[in-house]
Length: 231
Image (cartoon, rainbow, N blue to C red):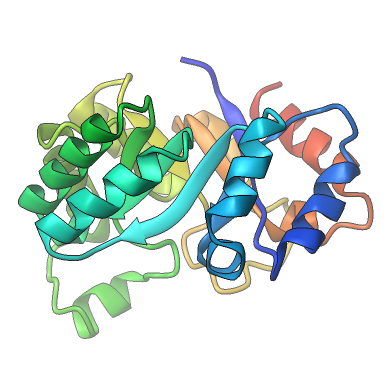
């Protein structure tokens, strides 16, 4: 299974996103489109970027009753995105419904589930969400549920990639945000690593936003990230 760096294109609009990607000239890095950009532009930007040859992880974290998620997955799958995510906390029936939706779309979209956001700390897990199990155990169980429901992988911290692979196999994808260069500010992330650490911990994909998009030279930052993660 190949590894790759996904750039989180968390921009307020299409123009900012397209201007950013122009810096890469003929290169087509794997990109993530999240809530802010999708809600600003709708599906039109996704269609345009797919037409230009970009691989897209559509990061919308669907979480609703099974029927709603199934229908939404069908619609989003028809956009031809490469990956789409849902919340594992929605339960097995919801995840299975999302798998049905992707199948009905006729696309090859890989469906993955968010285990716990990388902004969640053990203190929040226990004190606010009232989940008393250790965080890595919760992530592992959510990953098992996702695999049983037919998903291709999960979103987790690089710190949990190893326990996910141990429970679900090496071919079960771990897509890991919470990656920063050594010395960078963690921002609102709580469970973070460097690209090199993510590689050692077993991440299949790392999702990197501000360390690339806010860099003085984004292309150089991206190449550094690829070098540290893939070699």
